[in-house]
Length: 370
Image (cartoon, rainbow, N blue to C red):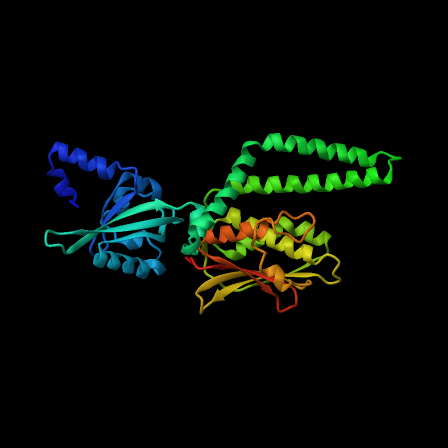
């Protein structure tokens, strides 16, 4: 791969060809020397990462990679130096505004005339949320991607026909409410109207959830404190918790910031707290505890929501993350499923277990720290 001086010395045709296949290529690419210093970056890579050429050329790869990931990045390039190429490594890269993007990296070794490695050409492929989540287990990638693709297609179709779906649901709801409110109706008619209304409301809730899912796209990860995300979600649900007479305990330890998408994380935490509160219906002294901290052994930040409710049966734990699985009459069965997809996009994980207080515990674990 020529440097800038060598590019300038090329003939007009050679320079035009080089611009076409590298600088103006639709595939994001960058070139590093053997010491992992950036030599060249094409326009697609600059657009993807938000940097300018002046920001990157001459800088080391540490400008593009989280410090804690540099060892892994170096190992990847050394493997490429030995084998010639490493394809589709699942990796994060830093953007100019210090957020991170999920990528597949293909690292091609560049050699001199004697065949000795002189540098690397990196091909950057943005990863869709479905692929990112499915690659948690590469052996089931095709099957998982197919399942996720079907669900995404449902969401897209729901989005396309949102008004057509909502309008008849609204008519069904309104008619059932009027029918139920009329005096002198036979008991079987009133019961039937209540059944229609209840199921129409559940269908409406499912449509809304699928709409939210179809609009989600990829998370935009930025440095953020998990405690701030929790506090914001608690503000949103505060009135509901007070009405249900559910007490909230907070135990926030000192943690580093992590890379997360505040919008989606607020939604995840809100749903987890809401699930915990619903599990406490009828409890005399219901309590939801939210805690955070740093796990030194795992090198993870955790945010845990637990309750002192009835807990979870072992058989339920096996199905909690299955789409549309729910134990509630008005549930959609998508809350924990989507929470896991979002945590996968964050490079983290979600753990559900029995709480030491006798109820249920859901813990969000984040590895990508600032």
